[in-house]
Length: 469
Ligand code: AMP
Ligand code: MG
Image (cartoon, rainbow, N blue to C red; front, side, top):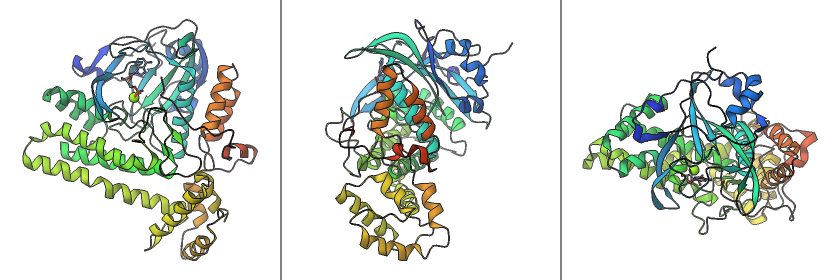
């Protein structure tokens, strides 16, 4: 019988200095938390098999499925602006790649699969909290229509993981267009390994941007993908929290759901991450940080561009185009958030006045926008409301349709995620399942689940989030 997972691996054909081959480390007593059946079928994997004991054994790292080529990828990166020459999959193992039903190549990776040569001091494991968090938030992002890595499954290991206390261990199966990061390029650029850079470049072009005919064109593609991605983050109040260069994909998918959070009340300076002392990765800083990261990527490509003065000028110009590409994408989404699909002069100012009103009143970002689609204007914005109605009446498209498709009713709110995790630690997974099912249809009103759209009460507000280790 051929394998249950239709592997078709390419990363493993790159030279050995790109990774370390090694299987996941087995765990004591695996049990299933969740299998993402829709995603399984998208990948050409039988969901019943994946949910079976044989599937569980694979998802826990206890058996290596036929056709897999398990390996840990190496990369480097700037973490909070400081250079780390050697990072890598310290708690993850890539099982292999599949070509999905739509013809797209996808990585299947076990996260929390044990120590690797890149673990540094870490134990290579994950506890239940970050695994559920990544499952909930990455699937919610997908449902919101925002490019992201996905969660194929989560399992418990039956082993404790030692953090500040002893916590239940878990493994997440992550699916990604690839796990290649800005930091992957940086790893080889820092070692002046032009041969590896060239091979990585070819791999990335074939895999993600076949339209790119040169390193400069690849740079343009990645800049455009990241500008679009970050505009979308901003449109739903998403704060990534740890936009290090090793957490920025070349594919343009959101990756690494560590201390990320969706903001409740609108505050452009909002920071949740416990380790982001200086607000480097605050909500409103994300576009600037993307430019910083993309400048690092651009400099990695220079050896492939001849390192001439002309190459430097071209690469710099490409990076400098980011702010405009971002602004255009961002403006288009925010116009739609107030129901405007056909731009007119003055629209951006109208959006800004609304946001300023939210800043002043501390209104809930998500609900203030969703409210507009039922003509509900936040307190203090009545004058704005008059101007908005006048402008809205000039629209030919139905502004209400535009708004309900752009303004989610449901986002993964921090207090709901925390509640789902606390219950799961106590052995009750029901809140986790309910939350996932509500978040699967974020743009639909779900009258039975109104509570999930409510902003937190003062006692429920989550002020800080933590890294996913
Ligand atoms: P992250 O904060 O998830 O971006 O991870 C930063 C680096 O730390 C990466 O090289 C990870 O592989 C590594 N790392 C994070 N958690 C662990 C862990 N529990 N064990 C080993 N390595 C880890
Ligand atoms: Mg990371």
